[in-house]
Amino acid sequence: MYCPSCGELLVRKPGGRCPSCSAQVAAHVVAERDRETRIEKVVAVVATALVLGMSVFTVGSGLIEGIAVYAGAGALVFYLARKTFAP
Ligand SMILES: [Zn+2]
Image (tube, rainbow, N blue to C red; front, side, top):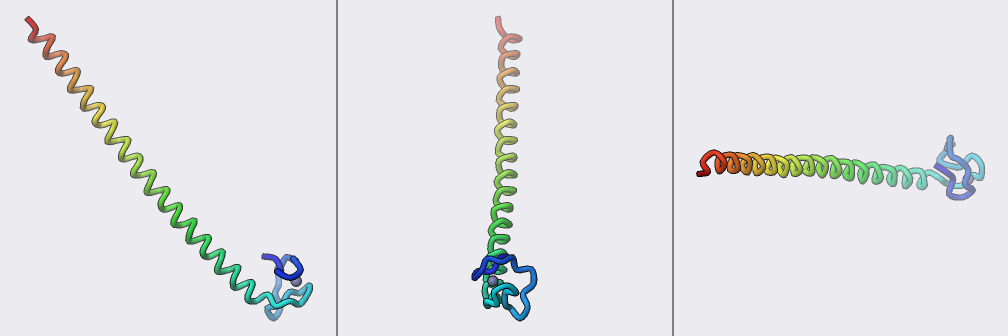
């Protein structure tokens, strides 16, 4: 986090002031912390959405593959049955 007044890296904030230029940085520190909390929340929501989307996609492709296998097996059985019972 950097001082909004002089751009100094704020490692220590004695009395909520910048040690370099003595500007009030307490409010800036709180605002920055709130912003970081919001970013973390957004990242958590996006990550959750991605995980849910991935699982839905995996289930969907599994279903389609299941239908394809079912249809393929059905066609094979139909083909074999026709061949077996053909005159
Ligand atoms: Zn400063």
